[in-house]
Image (cartoon, rainbow, N blue to C red; front, side):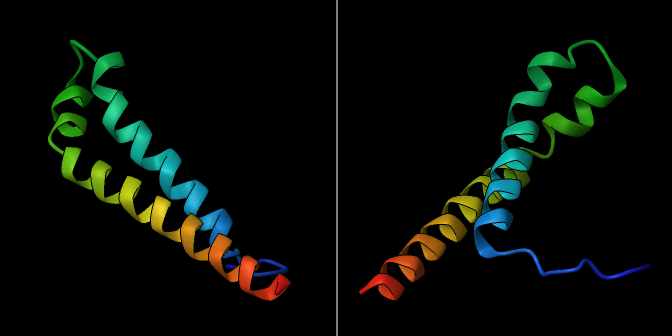
Amino acid sequence: MTRPSRPLRTLERGILCLVIGAAVLLGPRFLQGTRWFEMVAGAYLVGWFALVLGVALIVVELVKRGKMRQ
């Protein structure tokens, strides 16, 4: 497995966590009647954790950028 040319920044990680959290939380609404529904619906805590982690990572990056400008 090759390494990316540059590491992911905190902002990019935060956005990815937000997308994953939203997908896990909104997934059961679109997967009704399938086998995936039970699996995704049971992972709502993971969705909330990813959502909160994404917000925290974005806030950390914005605070870090604000301190660099001063």
